[in-house]
Image (cartoon, rainbow, N blue to C red; front, side, top):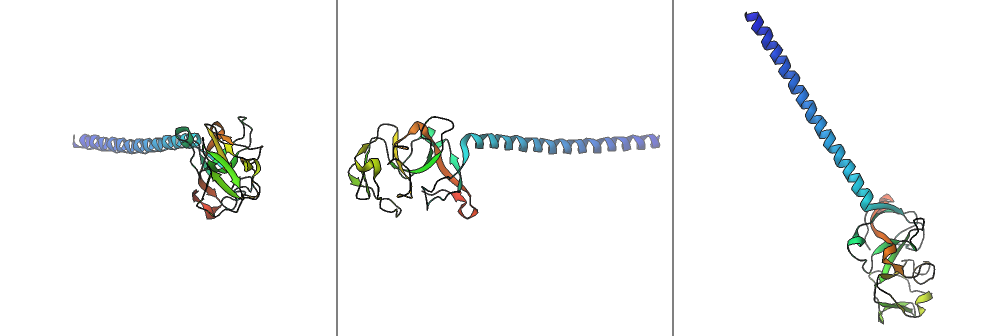
Length: 198
C-alpha cells in the first residue's frame, strides 16, 4: 500500500513539475510574442512617420554635405506649417518620380521677399539669420519683389551662391502640398549622428 502511495505521489510530483515547465514555456512564448508584435508595430509606425533621405546636392553646404543621410519627419507638416529656418524636403511637382530637394525656409505665405545688394528683405525689412551665410551675389527672380500666396514658401540653400532654389524658375516658390517633410535626425555620417539643428 505504501509502495502504491509512493508511486502515486512520484507521478503527481512529476506531473506537477511538467505542468510548471509548460507554464514557464508558455510565459516565455507569451513574452516573445508580445515583443514581436511591438517590434512590428514600431516598424509600421516608423515607415508611416519617417523616411530616410540622402542629400544629393551641394546646395546646403556646409550645414549638410553631399551624401549625408537623414530621417525625414513626414507627419509634422500635416499637423502644422513650416516655420522660417526649417530645413524641408520637397518636390517641385506632384509626380511620384519627382526628385526630392532639401532647402531652408526663408519666406512664409503672405510675405514679400526681395534680394537687394546681397541682403534678403522680408516685407521690406532686412532678414537677420542666426548663422553667418555668404552675401548673395545673384538675386535671380528675387531681384524684383516676390509676394507669396497662401500655401507658398520661399526657400534658399545654405550654400547661397551655389544653390538652385526659389530664386530660379526650375524651383520657384514651393507649394505646401509638395512639401514631403522636415529634416529631423542625421543618421550618417557617424560624426554627425543626432537631431538636426537648423
